Length: 443
Image 1 (cartoon, rainbow, N blue to C red):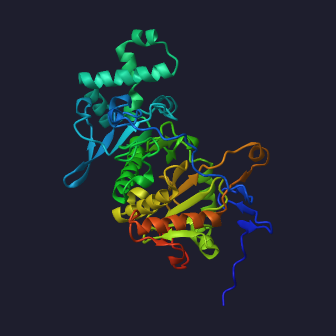
Image 2: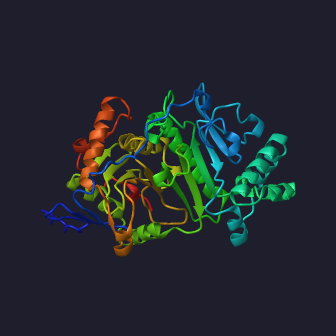
Image 3: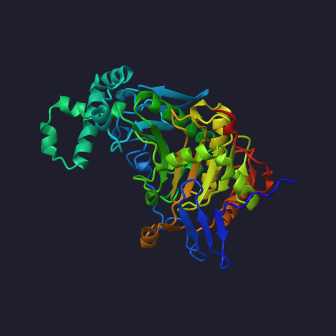
């Protein structure tokens, strides 16, 4: 009989119920103290306000009747009689000819600007991007749109209106290069509120989409990530994330994801690569292999597994692809759909009133060690304060065991109502098996 491996000590439950945790990848230290998780989780709201039907589609700058308030879109996903279609190079005059279920537009206030890439790396717009820019600007509607958005950005930066008006058109157009070849994009969903909403408490979140709609959202994001790498050869990593509600960093309470091309891997990815150098099976060993015997697995399907994470600053559900292919854009449509269904189910269980961050983690190009595509859903239900700053010990208000119970119970209710995709085994239905993540089968 094989000897039982020693407990690595990632979680320790003390006699009073305190749970001390260490993140096995980053080394982050977290405590969950009894009693601190009894506070309400959702964002406190005033009495809901009735929605004016005349405002439909105009609630924020991301809404479908305010297309001209965002920079020129790079593409959009529309519904057709045959299903779904992605449209590219839509001219300004045709923006209202179709309804975009999802749009990819440049972020008006990007983290790394086009000027950053141009000055530091000599990055130039690729010829196909130049052609798209010239085509868009060649129409009066396109030129007016670009000049209007540039003016909005300059005003937000404190430039007086008179100075903007005095600026030559050519100079203002030059400032729009990032609208076409920049590396920070936003993928915006159509709805601000759920269809048929009557008051402002009925926000449309990832979990209120249908599984099919969410699958298009995820597949479109995966394809956009691949294209971000293709456009900028200097990008070492494309960070993909979703901020839901203002306490989680969202500028608008309107569903959207962000993609940011950066020139570093970041400390977390560097730590993961180093860990994989020591243990190729790291993400099995510190993920499902550790979570399963401790009752932390939330759900599993043919293509994904979700479990309550530990050693995170906030309550976190970890979702891992079980595909042998590490790169999301090279996975089969069925594998990407499997990840989408699991992410959607966890969002649906979370609900639209809990602020959360959705973080994607993947192997960047040029890294020869395999790692699984992972998505972390973090509930932003606490605020970091002086204790964390002084000690770098973080107080997570919900223990992993409690988080697992809450999510499994809600998923069970949602499944009974047909709200999540079929094919997900929940909680104790998940069979015990080692190494469900198959990324180690490739180089």
